Image (cartoon, rainbow, N blue to C red; front, side, top):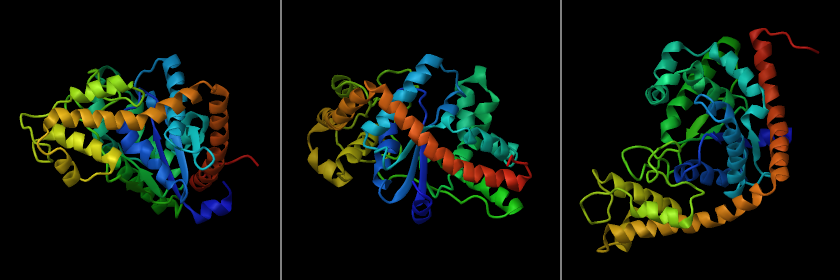
Length: 337
């Protein structure tokens, strides 16, 4: 990536935590959508391992899942030659800018973050400062690269607004420093819900084995989970208020097939829920089969993955250092010649 390219193309940044097995929700809401940008944007996609440790992680498992997450990026179609793929902790500027931005984020606005409230309830024995300032690190991730567009799930839009508030606050004090990012929510698959509790988002950390479909689940497991998906007492496949389970399955089916609600309703007219749930499971399993095969191949070549990590970190660090140096100079830090 050269300076001329950076000036011509707008920049996209996003990332996924390696804190658990990635779900179909992660795939549809994030990874699958990223590929469409690789020809027209400067794309940086990060394995956000710094974010992951706000919850206690087993070190060996975190290391393994970091490799797995990077492998899934590539297996899902992201070309390392066209996208900058890297691990967050390999670029120290993320943590360095986060500290500076902590001093421009207000306690009140951080305390209003919905995710902090939710996680504080879920992890009541470990409400650490990192959990509270998590959105500031996310702001640093985005602002480091003068990001224009951030593909996110709808539940992350609050963090994008906070990022903009922090950037605007800093710019007002020190002049034009950070570009104002915009959040992007894909039309299909923006928020995939739990198969067991369809009023809740599908989660990597759900303890109910039937609630989440993981990208690396076997074909049999994928179909079994969809067959057991919670629906309602109706039998007609149609999107409507109060039909959270069917609405969710239709969203998933649309995301994998491109079919509209009207197409789906016509396809399954008179067939009932059982037939529809099996069809959704088969569509998902078919789509993920080539991802599984490529993932297995990549995980058998650790040297290749480490090469991608190293090259991606070097590219990201070059861009990050330019922003961080500007920030340090503006706030008055001295820098070695």
